[in-house]
Length: 92
Ligand SMILES: [Zn+2]
Image (cartoon, rainbow, N blue to C red; front, side, top):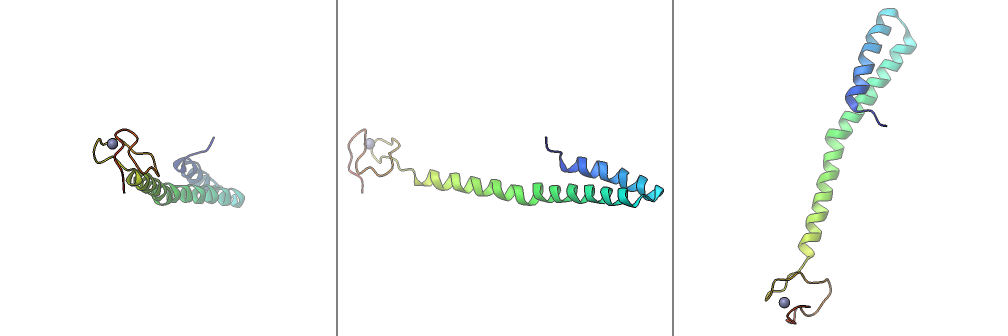
């Protein structure tokens, strides 16, 4: 199971504060690492992931545009056909 970005930060901040007070340098480093992981996940989720979704939407749109319809009976034509498979109308 993967932890969401806010959980890394929510764990990292108290670890950082408590270890800062107690001067436990190893735990300060762990707390900082958790916060850095949380921030990088946050950046990925809000900057990189939406871009991927946008690209997928564009690919679907592109595929949809390549679909042809018969001008006479408006059925969806199979790719590469030279005549409508329903009414037999010749296509250019
Ligand atoms: Zn047709």
